[in-house]
Image (tube, rainbow, N blue to C red; front, top):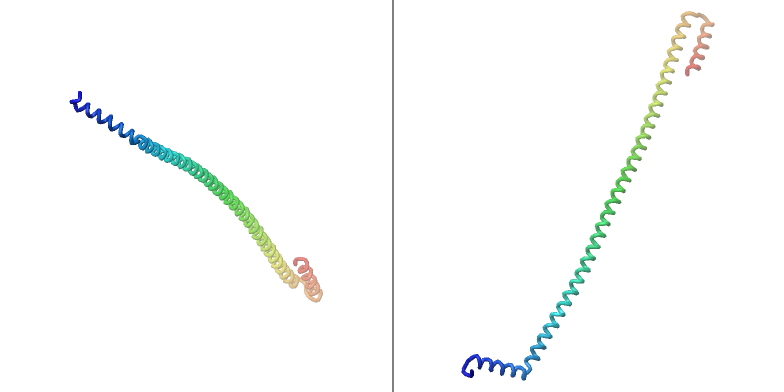
Length: 161
Protein backbone atom coordinates (compact mmCIF):
# COMPACT_ATOMS: atom_id res chain seq x y z
CA UNK A 1 0.00 0.00 0.00
CA UNK A 2 2.80 2.55 0.81
CA UNK A 3 4.65 1.39 -2.25
CA UNK A 4 2.00 2.45 -4.66
CA UNK A 5 2.04 5.87 -6.30
CA UNK A 6 -1.67 6.43 -5.94
CA UNK A 7 -1.40 6.18 -2.17
CA UNK A 8 1.28 8.87 -2.03
CA UNK A 9 -0.74 11.07 -4.38
CA UNK A 10 -3.75 10.68 -2.06
CA UNK A 11 -1.62 11.48 1.01
CA UNK A 12 -0.08 14.52 -0.73
CA UNK A 13 -3.55 15.68 -1.71
CA UNK A 14 -4.80 15.39 1.87
CA UNK A 15 -1.74 17.27 3.17
CA UNK A 16 -2.20 19.97 0.51
CA UNK A 17 -5.83 20.38 1.49
CA UNK A 18 -4.85 20.62 5.17
CA UNK A 19 -2.26 23.31 4.35
CA UNK A 20 -4.88 25.20 2.31
CA UNK A 21 -7.30 25.00 5.21
CA UNK A 22 -4.65 26.14 7.63
CA UNK A 23 -3.55 29.06 5.46
CA UNK A 24 -7.21 30.06 4.72
CA UNK A 25 -7.23 29.62 0.99
CA UNK A 26 -10.84 28.50 1.21
CA UNK A 27 -11.82 31.86 2.75
CA UNK A 28 -10.00 33.74 0.02
CA UNK A 29 -11.59 31.54 -2.62
CA UNK A 30 -15.07 31.98 -1.10
CA UNK A 31 -14.52 35.75 -0.81
CA UNK A 32 -13.47 35.95 -4.47
CA UNK A 33 -16.53 33.90 -5.47
CA UNK A 34 -18.77 36.14 -3.33
CA UNK A 35 -17.29 39.27 -4.97
CA UNK A 36 -17.77 37.73 -8.37
CA UNK A 37 -21.39 36.83 -7.53
CA UNK A 38 -22.03 40.38 -6.30
CA UNK A 39 -20.48 41.84 -9.45
CA UNK A 40 -22.59 39.56 -11.66
CA UNK A 41 -25.70 40.44 -9.63
CA UNK A 42 -24.90 44.15 -10.07
CA UNK A 43 -24.42 43.69 -13.80
CA UNK A 44 -27.73 41.83 -14.00
CA UNK A 45 -29.46 44.61 -12.06
CA UNK A 46 -27.92 47.21 -14.38
CA UNK A 47 -28.99 45.19 -17.42
CA UNK A 48 -32.53 44.88 -16.04
CA UNK A 49 -32.62 48.63 -15.32
CA UNK A 50 -31.31 49.44 -18.80
CA UNK A 51 -33.87 47.07 -20.31
CA UNK A 52 -36.68 48.82 -18.41
CA UNK A 53 -35.39 52.24 -19.52
CA UNK A 54 -35.17 51.03 -23.10
CA UNK A 55 -38.75 49.73 -22.90
CA UNK A 56 -39.90 53.11 -21.53
CA UNK A 57 -38.06 54.98 -24.29
CA UNK A 58 -39.50 52.62 -26.91
CA UNK A 59 -43.02 53.13 -25.57
CA UNK A 60 -42.45 56.90 -25.53
CA UNK A 61 -41.25 56.89 -29.14
CA UNK A 62 -44.18 54.72 -30.20
CA UNK A 63 -46.56 57.17 -28.51
CA UNK A 64 -44.80 60.11 -30.19
CA UNK A 65 -44.97 58.36 -33.56
CA UNK A 66 -48.67 57.63 -33.11
CA UNK A 67 -49.29 61.25 -32.09
CA UNK A 68 -47.30 62.49 -35.10
CA UNK A 69 -49.29 60.20 -37.41
CA UNK A 70 -52.57 61.46 -35.94
CA UNK A 71 -51.38 65.05 -36.32
CA UNK A 72 -50.33 64.39 -39.91
CA UNK A 73 -53.75 62.86 -40.66
CA UNK A 74 -55.45 65.87 -39.08
CA UNK A 75 -53.30 68.24 -41.14
CA UNK A 76 -54.10 66.33 -44.33
CA UNK A 77 -57.83 66.22 -43.57
CA UNK A 78 -57.92 69.91 -42.66
CA UNK A 79 -55.98 70.74 -45.83
CA UNK A 80 -58.48 68.73 -47.88
CA UNK A 81 -61.39 70.48 -46.17
CA UNK A 82 -59.75 73.87 -46.76
CA UNK A 83 -59.14 73.02 -50.42
CA UNK A 84 -62.76 71.93 -50.83
CA UNK A 85 -63.95 75.13 -49.15
CA UNK A 86 -61.71 77.25 -51.37
CA UNK A 87 -62.94 75.37 -54.45
CA UNK A 88 -66.57 75.91 -53.40
CA UNK A 89 -65.88 79.62 -52.78
CA UNK A 90 -64.17 79.93 -56.14
CA UNK A 91 -67.10 78.17 -57.85
CA UNK A 92 -69.57 80.49 -56.13
CA UNK A 93 -67.55 83.57 -57.06
CA UNK A 94 -67.22 82.33 -60.63
CA UNK A 95 -70.97 81.76 -60.86
CA UNK A 96 -71.61 85.25 -59.46
CA UNK A 97 -69.13 86.69 -61.95
CA UNK A 98 -70.82 84.88 -64.83
CA UNK A 99 -74.26 86.06 -63.67
CA UNK A 100 -73.04 89.66 -63.39
CA UNK A 101 -71.36 89.49 -66.80
CA UNK A 102 -74.51 87.99 -68.29
CA UNK A 103 -76.66 90.73 -66.78
CA UNK A 104 -74.23 93.38 -68.03
CA UNK A 105 -74.25 91.87 -71.51
CA UNK A 106 -78.04 91.57 -71.48
CA UNK A 107 -78.40 95.21 -70.41
CA UNK A 108 -75.97 96.29 -73.14
CA UNK A 109 -77.92 94.24 -75.67
CA UNK A 110 -81.23 95.77 -74.46
CA UNK A 111 -79.72 99.24 -74.67
CA UNK A 112 -78.44 98.53 -78.18
CA UNK A 113 -81.86 97.18 -79.18
CA UNK A 114 -83.59 100.29 -77.79
CA UNK A 115 -81.09 102.53 -79.59
CA UNK A 116 -81.57 100.60 -82.83
CA UNK A 117 -85.36 100.79 -82.44
CA UNK A 118 -85.12 104.54 -81.83
CA UNK A 119 -82.85 104.91 -84.87
CA UNK A 120 -85.31 102.89 -87.01
CA UNK A 121 -88.24 105.01 -85.77
CA UNK A 122 -86.35 108.21 -86.48
CA UNK A 123 -85.42 106.99 -89.94
CA UNK A 124 -89.04 105.92 -90.56
CA UNK A 125 -90.30 109.29 -89.33
CA UNK A 126 -87.86 111.14 -91.54
CA UNK A 127 -88.84 108.94 -94.49
CA UNK A 128 -92.56 109.48 -93.76
CA UNK A 129 -92.07 113.23 -93.48
CA UNK A 130 -90.13 113.31 -96.71
CA UNK A 131 -92.76 111.19 -98.48
CA UNK A 132 -95.63 113.26 -97.08
CA UNK A 133 -93.95 116.49 -98.05
CA UNK A 134 -93.30 115.18 -101.55
CA UNK A 135 -96.88 113.95 -101.99
CA UNK A 136 -98.43 117.07 -100.51
CA UNK A 137 -96.19 119.40 -102.46
CA UNK A 138 -97.20 117.72 -105.69
CA UNK A 139 -100.94 117.56 -104.95
CA UNK A 140 -101.63 120.85 -103.10
CA UNK A 141 -100.38 124.21 -104.36
CA UNK A 142 -100.26 127.68 -103.00
CA UNK A 143 -100.25 129.25 -99.54
CA UNK A 144 -102.79 126.78 -98.16
CA UNK A 145 -100.51 123.97 -99.23
CA UNK A 146 -97.50 125.55 -97.57
CA UNK A 147 -99.43 126.01 -94.28
CA UNK A 148 -100.80 122.47 -94.38
CA UNK A 149 -97.40 121.09 -95.22
CA UNK A 150 -95.63 122.89 -92.40
CA UNK A 151 -98.38 121.96 -89.90
CA UNK A 152 -98.39 118.28 -91.00
CA UNK A 153 -94.62 117.96 -90.86
CA UNK A 154 -94.56 119.45 -87.38
CA UNK A 155 -97.25 117.03 -86.15
CA UNK A 156 -95.56 113.98 -87.67
CA UNK A 157 -92.21 114.96 -86.16
CA UNK A 158 -93.79 115.51 -82.76
CA UNK A 159 -95.64 112.16 -82.81
CA UNK A 160 -92.84 109.99 -84.17
CA UNK A 161 -89.97 111.42 -82.16
